[in-house]
Image 1 (cartoon, rainbow, N blue to C red):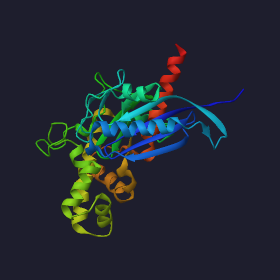
Image 2 (image 1 turned 30 degrees about the vertical axis):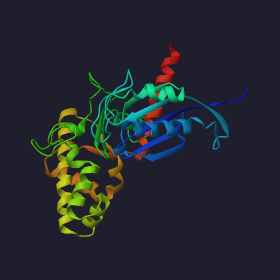
Image 3 (image 1 turned 60 degrees about the horizontal axis):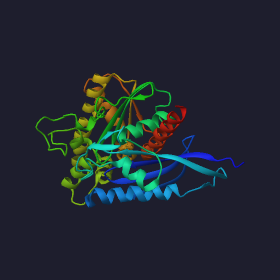
Image 4 (image 1 turned 135 degrees about the vertical axis):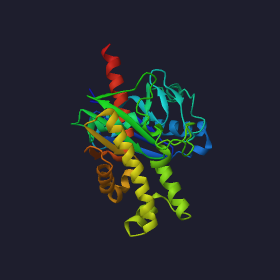
Amino acid sequence: MINMESCWIGIDIGGTGIKGALVNEQGQMIERMELPTQAEQGAEFILNRVLYIANELKSIVYDSIKKQFITIHGIGIGSAGRIDREKGIVIDATDNLPGWKGLHLAERVMESTGLPVYTVNDAHAAAAGEDWIGAAAVIRSWIMLTIGTGVGGALVHYGEIISGQYGGAGELGHMILHPGGRQCNCGKKGCVEQYISGKALNRIAADYHAGWGLSDLMDAARTGDAEARYLLDNWINDFASTIINMDQIFDPQAVIIGGGVIVTRETWWPLLIQRIDELGGRPVLLEPALLGNQAGMVGAARIAMQNHRMRNQT
């Protein structure tokens, strides 16, 4: 009898990139893929990219590392926006994924692949990954904060991701930081996302110097550009204020920070900790996400695995 290795597909849909991985029971990625989202092309274009990744990963039948044939039991998808986990529908989404609201995501992917599909918010997926084999593996009560194109969050208490009544718990990017401030895609003004996201940092950098992105701004601040450092300090001030507010409300054991901006952390991490202290926040354990931008894929696969096992126990 052939010994088959059980695997699941995890897909992470963000405003900038769509990432997918084939993940085994130990959380190891056998194969991974990534495509740019090109969100401006609209919902059907984005969905077709998701379907392409799902079907390419589904076609893999052999683990060359373990020298085993594999069987794929299902697909987990983490998507930006508010997700109805039970129905697999995108309840709400900002213009980071235009036209995404109302999409029957699980149904469309299931029709294409023939596999069971489980959908969650992308930050919830990242939290599931970090809780499984990442920075939160030994932490009981914590907050996941993802800083990418947008700002996402998840609240985790003893291994359970708190979803809230309508699936929107942890939407930290849409807390109001500056009342009456910048217009947000969600319809409110002054949201956290408009000030500390990667997209916000790119805008700040481009306003200062045409053609610059966030990495250029970080480099300039690190090498002594006074104006770049001033702009970075403003960003850190907003970031620190957000963390202090979250800490005051949720009293977590730790805040784990992930998303694309984390790769530049050597420039701003010590400054963030210092600013939290200066603003009078209580000492809070800050940890970088160990899985980096792979957390969403791994976590989505983990959620699919958990659902598969629960379904087969009943």
